[in-house]
Length: 213
Image (cartoon, rainbow, N blue to C red; front, top):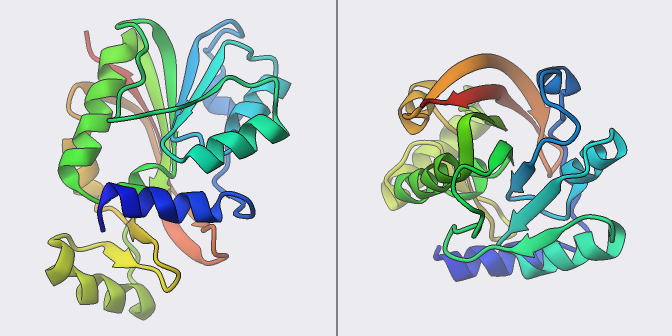
């Protein structure tokens, strides 16, 4: 599935889909209220709106789905939401205090594409800036193992799978995440269980990592 197919998929879901991963404000305790925060893969702005209501107002959200951005502008007109192209935020280098990355990696199934996103995040973060990630880990139940195996040959990665409605997603091995976070020092990592956008339970994680100087 190419990027245009993925974009069409998320544009189709934009009017009705509700996302579910949770923001833990305890992980933001050291962040001042005037900190510059970017939500990369913001969807319709749900997490940014939670931050806004908590007093963080220097916020920008980016997403590649035009329909998601339009929904966010309709629901949360006080937020600054922008369409991203070719993974580039157009933020100045070393200008951002924190990047939020919630359930974005699961939607980007190729290693190289994920690495480009992390390179852009590293580029825009200030020295010592942080990235806060919520995403999904591999599951060991039979339903998931069967679909991981079914699509591994097609996509070349164990953990990638297709949904019946046309979506393409990925669950991640913990060791792979360590490789992906090259250039960052992990400060917090906790395994958890998230409810997916389709109402299933899935292994997941919350991570905060600091940009290395």
